Length: 339
Image (cartoon, rainbow, N blue to C red; front, side, top):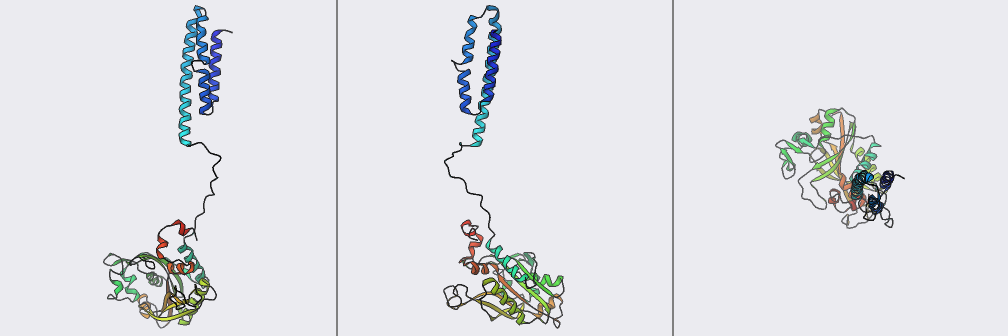
């Protein structure tokens, strides 16, 4: 065969095998076979001494250009393998244990507790309304029959944005906004985040959540309030749950009461959680004060109603046996994954 044809065939074969190299190891084997000092290209170059003078020039040029072309192709291929290896990281180790399936997220215990509260009261005909967290003093205090000299107006009890703008300290402003926007009959739950400058401890936090309920209609009595909340307590904490109502005071209700439930941890027999009393307070309630109805333009001779409010954290703590309110705010996965 013509020496030039053999050289072209050699380079064509070398390029084909170079293209077929699939990893760094096969690429190195190709380099040793073709480009090393004892490789096929070097052996083919030695043949130039045996050629007739008229072929040596063309043969030498062909071999030099072909070798340079192969060296360039080799460097590009080697660089490509290096970049790919760096992106992939270490080689796969088949002896390592498999990765677990991707973990599914959890509903936050405050969210699941609120969902449960809404579910119970929705079966009693209550809807849900949400309102702003930044309020005026009028909606947060004045319209709720809380006078200007009441301690809750003080900056030690309420966060002030400016002189007459506050971060709502309870969800009760939603009662006023609801009654101003619609006429009775009204049955509504008002959940939301609230703020008070409290020192943080196991039972207090400057950010917390409340859920208020409001029912307004003709001939509503305190017995209706007691029956409604008794149903809620049994649905939330179990059918054996007892309730009791103790007189209390809230500016926006009259009469007012605190509602206790029989301790769910000791079934009312007395334990350290209920302080040996057998009862745990869970919410405040009462009949809507006539002054509140007057502030929204309701006929106090025709309409009556009741309102109640509970801390969602408190319900969740009792429901799940959580000892510290701070756990809800820490985003600790070991805590949250229990729910």
